[in-house]
Length: 120
Image 1 (tube, rainbow, N blue to C red):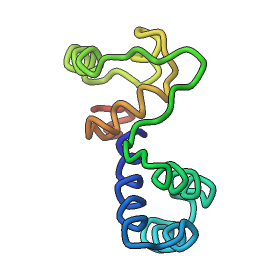
Image 2: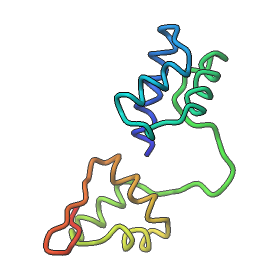
Image 3: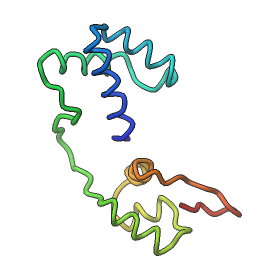
């Protein structure tokens, strides 16, 4: 998910530097990527961050347990068993299946359903 978020942040910075308003940026991004790709509030928050002089694309620190998953671990598990499911990978690494799906998306690995099996 982080990959997609960073992409939108670059676009938001582009519109910010062009002197557009957050609402204008939101409208144009949604015209290209679809209505649910980013919220107006998210655009406003990033414009606020840019106005304060912070142009980093990193998320602010949040409370809660950080996910400590190494992409190399995921790749090794998949190479070991190409028919493994996302949930099985998540169980082995003791994280949520959503975390694994996000990492797989960032790695450019796509789900394929062949003969009832998911293959990455």
